Length: 245
Image (cartoon, rainbow, N blue to C red; front, side, top):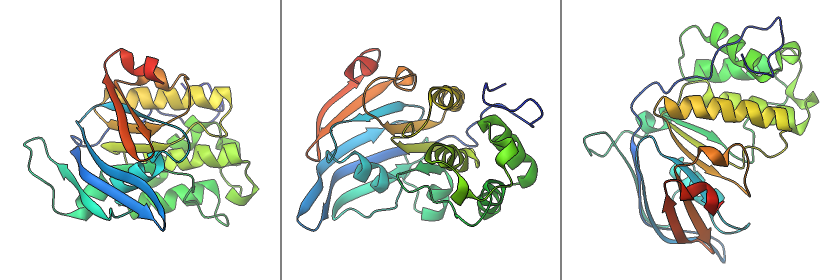
């Protein structure tokens, strides 16, 4: 049981990946915002089941890379593909998006809905079976059970982040993209997130996560990619990945 769960709350282990995750292929991807070049000819391949840290200073291109990989931003040049276990490129964007969970700087939550209503909305958007039960289990694991009926606009930044992360995990993604997910989380909540990510990664989910510095989360990494001024400066795998953080 998560240390954050209320004693009387429903709870369950972190969700497992629902399907074999696709490979993510970025080929010579560039992206500009006005006069600013966020990505410069980035070529990377992320294999199923990797846990990749995206490192680099502010403005290095980490957030843009995650948004491009989540199909939320279209590259100006280059190509982003998702391929199945046989290497066949998936052509249906709806199929690809259903396999992705995304946490960015915008929580994507509705302020005038409760935490429970927000999660039920997203559960039904994904057509999840037993939506109410899954939402109840998920809220219990975050430690927000007693606040589940409160409007999200009354939540602290850290509480909103917990709900946002839960939203991204709810449909059991095969690919999880996280942009500074520990922002505003206290030590206990970071421990909950690390536990959830460990279980999800162990189930086969591919995780890409931007971060600053070491934490309980970076210890999970199998690879570290460092960006500077929109370019890949290093790409380290294995035990050296956490040391790169």
